[in-house]
Length: 159
Image 1 (cartoon, rainbow, N blue to C red):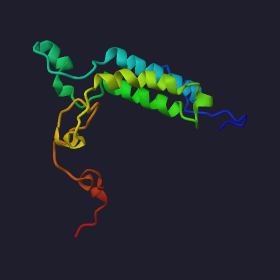
Image 2 (spheres, rainbow, N blue to C red; image 1 turned 180 degrees about the vertical axis):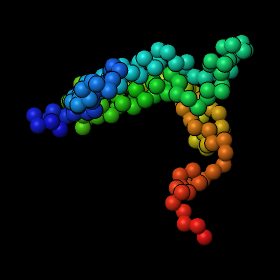
Image 3 (cartoon, one colour; image 1 turned 60 degrees about the horizontal axis):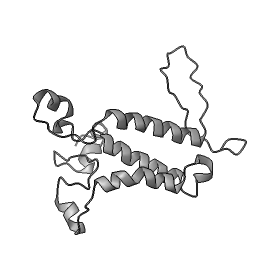
């Protein structure tokens, strides 16, 4: 909260900064931060494919193919935008953000409709590696545990 009681977010940097620029950028208001996030996600949605898919044309496949499966796509950007809108429209933030539940629903609705039908059996979601309910995933290509991926080996004491 600012001294005047206004809810603040992060410093909004929408241009390239050089080492000689003033880096003491004040925090933006919460509402302006939400708008900035929406603008960034709208740009991502505009330029990213809805989902990454293999295309018969080899030249197009190099750019849009399934090899990009784990990278963010248009639908993931839509989902993040809907989630930000849901948070911003909550009773904790809606008076400050200006985002309503109706706006949040309008952002989420088309994405959810594009993923229908949902599996009737909830277990199917966990058994299918590729399904329409998954918007953005991280494939586990190598079976490693969380500890193996994150343990600081250089701090280990030699035996």
